[in-house]
Length: 136
Image 1: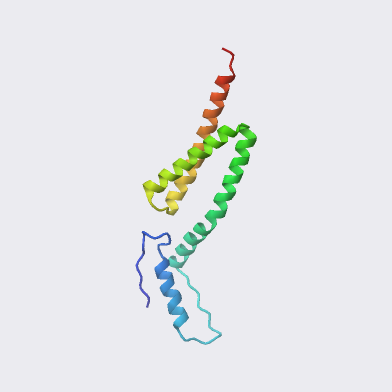
Image 2 (image 1 turned 60 degrees about the vertical axis):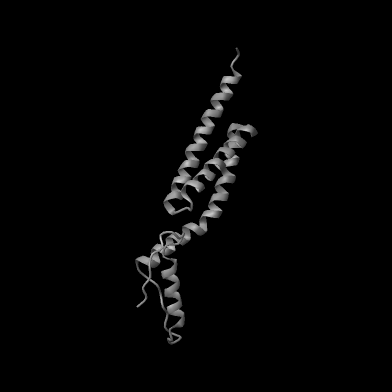
């Protein structure tokens, strides 16, 4: 029997348990025609978090590229696009300082922050552009 502790401070809380299980499987003598599969709550939860953290880099990069394209096409102002991305970078830096490390829940809130932040930036920038375009 393999026992392990969940490390909630780590990005993969079940990582040590899964490593212990994989080590136990690798060191166990068994016939070649016997396959060992990991099932249950712990392996499933570990795979979900692992898949989310592995895919977030590509998804985040693609989302930022698409966001830039939408802002450039929609707002048509390089200064507004730059200001929006600077605001998002400052918010991201603040979140990193406040939270320390990202968990699945904090990543969800970060995505919501980006969405609401861009929405607010677009509305604010277009309102300023409208006010500046009005004849005095």
